[in-house]
Length: 404
Image (cartoon, rainbow, N blue to C red; front, side):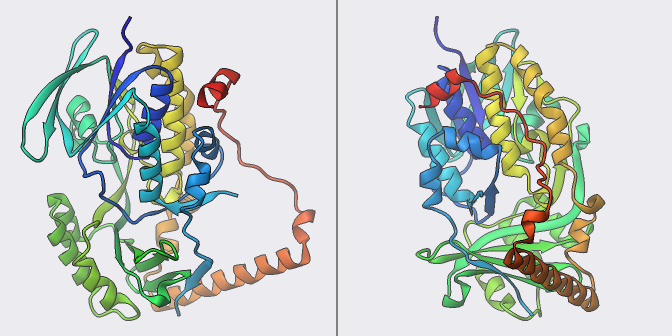
C-alpha cells in the first residue's frame, strides 16, 4: 500500500519539523514555501523545554549551538538555546530535506484547494512563471503563518471568521550592516509615544546586526494602510515617518532599513479559532493560534504543535489524528496565549512619556541589582523550587529509536 501523501504549506519552524517527523513515520511529504530558499529574517528566538526535547531528538542541537548569537548581555541605552530564526529554519530545512520522503518547492503557493471524501486536490502556483500544476494529496497542513493562505481558502478571510485579535502594537524586523559598537551586547532604546528600537548582534563573525522596531499604539493609520497593501516601500516610508527626528542610532537604522531586503512589518495580532481543522485540511503554528511575540511562546508552540500533529498522524493515519491533536493541545495553547500583566505588558514596557521611560529604566536597574545580589550571596538555595507545568510530549521508546 503506498504511503499517504501530505502537503505542508510553509517551510518555517512548524512546517519543517512536521515534515521531518512525518518522513520518519513513512509519509510522503511535499512542502511549499512562497519565499526564496535563501531569504532570511532577522528575528531573535529562544527555545526552552519541552520544545527543546523535540530539537534534541532531531539530533540538531549541536549544530544550533554553533549558531548561537554569542551576545554577552543587554544594554538599556540612556539552559536554553538562544539564536536567530533564520538559523533555526535553515537547520530544520536541511534536516527535513535530507529525507527521501520530503520534497521542498520554494517560490510556490497554494492557488486553490478542492476537497473530496478521501482526497485533496491542490493547485500549486509557481510565483516566477505563474504556471499552475494540480497535485493530489491525502491531507493538507497549513503552517503558513498569521495571514495563512490555507486558512483563508478553507475557512474564509480573517474578517469573515473574526479570528484576528489585535494586541495594540506594530512591529518590523530587518538587518543592517554591522558596526563595531554593535558587538557584543544587545541594545534597546525607548522613545516617547511608545516607540522602541532594539538592536541585537547576530554573531561575532556576521557582517549584519538584527533590528526590531516596536510601536505600541493601537491605531497608526498610515502604517496600518501600508501593512494592508503589503508594499514594503510604503511600509518603510510609514516607519521612517514614525521614527523621524529621534536620536541615538535612529538615523542610521532608518537609512539602512530603506535598503534592507529582508524587511518584514505587520500589526501584531493573536489568532483564535473555534476549530483548527476542516475535513482534510488542518492548521498548525501561527496559522492556527498565533500567540504574538509578547507571550514569548510562538516558536515553543510551533515546535510542540508539529511534534504532536506528527505523533497523532502516526498513531491514527486518518482524520481522527486532527481531533486528537487539538484535544491534546488546545488548553495548553490557550494558556500560552495569555499576555503578561493582564495584557498590558506591551504598554507597561513601552512607556508613553519621558517620565515613564525613566521610571521603567530605574525599575530595570533595581531588579538587575537585586538579581546580582541574590546570585552573589547564593540566596537562591533558600528559595523554593518552582517549575511551570510541562506539556507531556508522550515520547515513547519506539519514537526515540526512530529518531536515532
